[in-house]
Length: 197
Image (tube, rainbow, N blue to C red; front, side, top):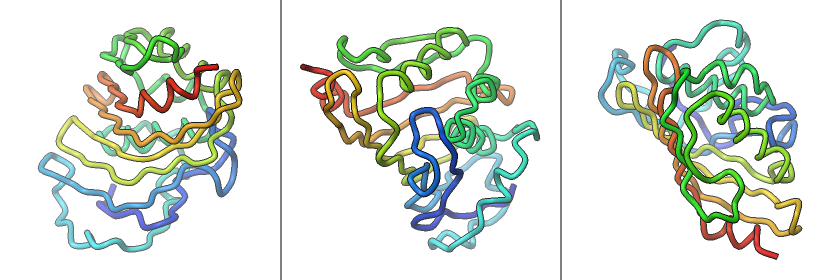
């Protein structure tokens, strides 16, 4: 897959998503992709200044098995945004170092390692939260088997009626074309407050 950048407002995908509103409120990118050293830098980053591009080709056929770290991360957000939980789970290894630190009153925090536990995590997002008012990917930083995605999301909590804005960093580790590490760093204070009656 060629190295290219995301410009402000590029829609990676739209659809109902797992807790994501369909259409224009779907997952968007607003930054440029930053690339460090690693196997996916074989092409020179000549287009690093933010340039518009068409992302439809990138996610047109999700039946193609993603292999590179970039393809796995792209497939993750495409499947998350379209609500394809089985397809999303297929991207994970059998055992995963999966961690989302946070307050005990937030139901999805903690560590997990199996696909069943990871399925429960994504199901909780859909049952505890309103569809996203915002879900933006600002930057993706690649380094070999590692990718860090930064962004911002805004959700409401169904049980309290409160909303939170969450600036996040999500660190993926990809081993043998599967996600073997998933570490979400989010605004745990804002989320905890939103879950407090």
